[in-house]
Length: 173
Image (cartoon, rainbow, N blue to C red; front, side, top):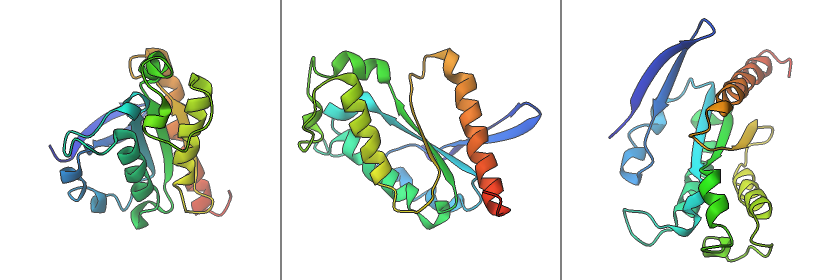
């Protein structure tokens, strides 16, 4: 699959979005080309906490996503880059959690109740703890990709991370 670039215009600004794919075999093809990125949008499917990777049929998808987030977040190319974390498929996660399987499938150390709020906060915290770069801007949102009302909120978040990066670059933030 590799890297797919899409360009579009919003509010008289040209946006370049890269879909890099998530499979292990694709990662070495894209990480080094992003030395001038202003914002990273990282998407992790919350609902995949009880699923395994296609590649090896043993590794938990949520743990793999968390490991990849840690690699991206702390990568030398993204040290000064803001990250927007989308914990996606919140609707499917809400349907599954505590009903079909426990969050303990992915995180045996989890001791809280199998409720949406408690489990979602735990997952979000795991992602935040994966960051080892002091003062990195990370914005987290629990999303549903089919919820069209979130589009404006998403754009505002992206603009906020870009503005924060520019202000930091000028020493104003």
